[in-house]
Length: 619
Image: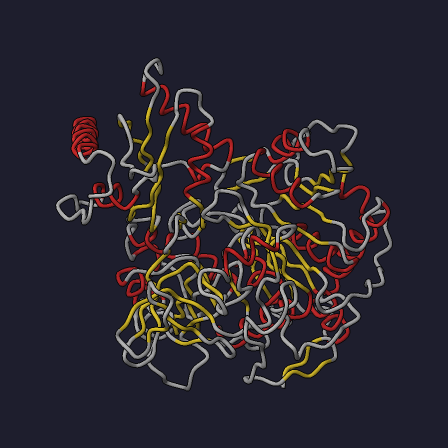
């Protein structure tokens, strides 16, 4: 039995509804979750403070090596209550939305938990997003408050967070206050909306009674990219989400009381929400907040941190593994990693070479390696090698086994279920589970169309998968116009929209292609107007436009100027042809009879060859 909010829930049997059982808006509520009357933040703090207040809740691994900060559960509860009281004093009530634009830090976690304590809905925005991206999320959620730092530190660089917020809130009429904390000693401009966070928080009472909440009240909004180009504000609710995050944290990673859990994800993503904050804290764990990068000040940073903090579970992205692999084994073997029991991979499929290196070099062939598949939409891990029987086999590069209550099915192109083993298809889930998102904020119709219309009665993940004869699952990648750059999901339409804002660019097409380090990278094909001027200058301006409108990681690695795009007679761009051209499969383009003019292929091939020749000459 597993306890949450005073209710006993049996595991491993998860009693969910079929996704088509009830009316829109309620069909995803698992029938067995009872009404609750306290915010789930209480399960992350108060219950542990009553039992063991001086246990360490957070270890903040700051950007500066060797300067970690440890915070007990008692201290975290007190600061959470102070900030909660401060939010209430400035007009934030149950149901109000609060934007958090902060890097990984104790104050960022405090902000999330303070919102949860008073029933406010937090939406954490990755602190690498541009002012325009931040403003778009604030406006969609109609946030009243933004919480941020004066500056951030990452990889030895200063990030001007407050300046980005200042630019964003110029376009956000719902913002009433900006709470500004200080990560550095540098002064920043403080305007009429700005409130010094630490100074005001210190005046507040360290006790704050939790707001009475129901199990299906909103806990947070988190925005994720889709194929349409407009980020979706996914709604996660109180009881089901926390139950699922805590249960998967405990069972997939073999968490034991006293363990130090090291998930190096940013809190701006769902991995940070579920496995840096909510899951570990609900289980009373010590969770590591990693502010820096894997190669600062050198390529041994992760493993020096493991040694110094005695981390037991390490959870990170394949992108970082592929990057560190190229630095060689010596940076790993330099440090003691004997505390590690479990290694985890998240965010994208992990290739065989990276899996083997992580298992053999980092884990010394003794640590269990869990390749986990899940999504922002699912709230927590859905397919992973664990839980499983003791000694059960683990296959490299495979997520393998569905978690309790997760029922995957594979679909063919006609919407029929693909039975048996050694088969591939569209990955769908046939049964509801506690952690699933309930809707898209303000647009339930879009939620239904994106996830349930493609295969009626089933949740469509957007991913393809392969099932072995033994019933194990391997994720094969996205099936829609979404690419996965360094574990960050991004719709190609978002990049296209950013580039199309340039007056010299009437048409663009962006596709993903394999990248040795990032997993996938973006390749942009652009058409220029006749009077566009210097193409190299336009390309430079396009890179800046994407960085400013979305984020730096979204900037295409390659941008190719072409005379026109390959279109069907109905005007649809045939992106599969572009993908085959840049991945060396131009001799196998398949059916091109629907092209308006087949000669466009020769034009693009010639342009691409000249582009490659130019790159080679420049090396």
